[in-house]
Amino acid sequence: MKKSLRIFSVLVVVAMLLALAAGCDVSSTTTETHTDADGNTTTTTTNNLTGESSTVETTAEEAAAAEEAEEAEGAEEAEEAEEAEEVAAEDEAVPVEAAMAIMNSSEVVFNEIYLALSTSDSWGDELLGDNAPLNPGELINGSFTYTDPDWDMQLVDEEGNEINFTGIDVTLAEDPENITLEIVTEDDGSLSVIIE
Image (tube, rainbow, N blue to C red; front, side):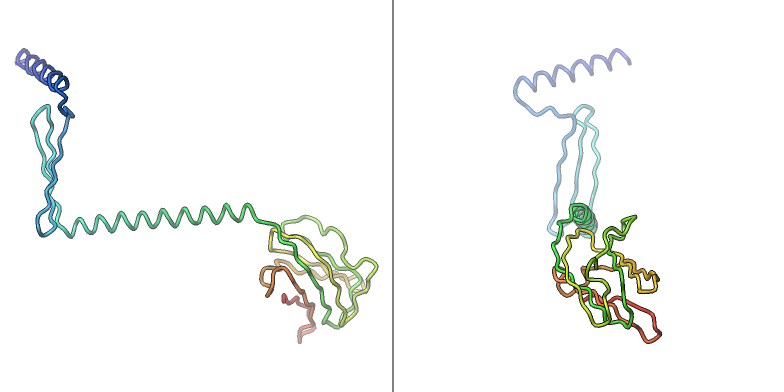
């Protein structure tokens, strides 16, 4: 038996070499697909070396379901790619030059005002400088450059009390290049900041 198998293997190799020399396709498998009028598909794969074959029949409904699954997978991949682009765009935020006004519409006098990025560990420079104090009804103007929209504000009143506001999103302003932060007194006496 082993001897006949070796002879068969040698014959197969010789046949493949002759086929190659004649320019024939000698791939190890051949696949034939036929679709009938109803959209049903029959695929037959034949092993060219052994002559064994297998057949898979697919109904039109199964083919449509497989196509929908591929489309859904493609849509999911496109959505993931879009999310990755958005994250990359956020990482490469473009600096925005903005005019800023701070309006004191409260009933409190402020001797110092600080603004800092929410991610910062320090307040940085005091904003009023020689214009201190900022009395009720007064306004100061300035400008700043930002890439991160979330800011914190610290107000120091005339008695030295510190009032902190965190997570002020300057992109909520009607015009993110002309921002007004209005300090107001609420009905309960507390202070809040309105972004305009």
